[in-house]
Image (cartoon, rainbow, N blue to C red):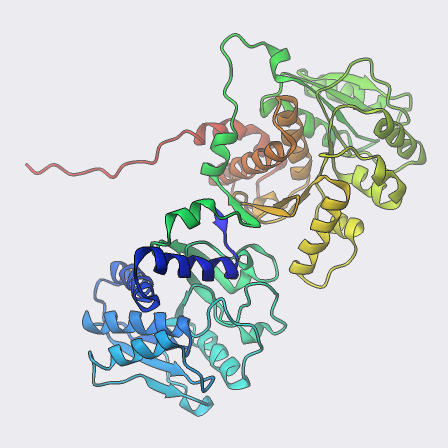
Length: 513
């Protein structure tokens, strides 16, 4: 799903009006009607007080359309205009005139704290104050209004995005933003729904189709894209009937040190569970017996040292290499990693201590092959790109780093973001259960195993991240968040694959007797 910028949304509105021969007021009517339909379907005429707060721009115009339809359908509606400026948009004024034709109770003008209405916890608030165009700090009394919303505990529905939230930067004052229970967004979600600093302002979001021009939606290239089931299905490579293990590649997992052989075991198991034909684990000598006894499907090669990887000598050419899980940062290990970077011809996934080695030996970065995949968690990313001010600064720094070295950068976390050539791919799967030891090792194995099967670097990253998260989503149905462990993610990768082609259940129609 594409994530359009505010500039693209403005352009889409304009093109839609031109191509469909409608006015911007008519497009606003369409948007507001869709929101009313959403509310009407759920409320079914219930006489709960609905408080519709409208700004004086186009978002406020949407609110007036919603209020008008609620009124004409007999709901208990209270409409307010948040008088935060002397300027009114044309479409706001058109809809202000329209609402006066359906009720003698005109919208109440709010200009200060003394005007705030009483709202009960059982009421509903519709927030249509500010939309995507907000670009300045709000007045103190409007901030107090948003705090009033929150203190009531009433269900709050925001239109397009929570008011006070900017589309392209992090607000400095969280009290100056509406904290929504649900947001109905037009055409596409907003990138702020997926960033740690800003996702907290809406508990849930949903997209409404307001009939924007199909050609615009299809042909417009966006910086960001949300990756879900229907985005990864075309990536999937089906199995061939007469294939053999060599068809699906030979992966090499390099890592482990004394006490951390489990990390390599998890990554190696994930390689095969994701579909690679073969996997070899390259570990220090202390890892030989643990791997051979706990995971018989892997082949094992050991380094010369008992407790660390001190050299990497290969007698075969793997299709893909994943390095870093449990690796450690001993001087001999650093030297071995450097020699591998100099000689390697295979696709490369760099994780954990291999990333930490790069950050402590920046001269090695120029040896990293183009299109390599780096998978840092937040602290590892900070060591790579430096400290950031907020999530947008983080993304800008990460994009620059990915471009400077022409690599695929996987920014791990909730809504893991993959960055390649200035494009952002935001993952839609996964849950808090993945905050567990070894989950990152499993992801390294998933991506490495897909590379072995011939997936290109970006596809391997996106597909591996999606399946990893989906497996965790399926696993928590049995284990819950707290009891999920990394091995469960491996164990449910089969169901994540099968879910790709599972048809949605059709509602059963009861036959009349």
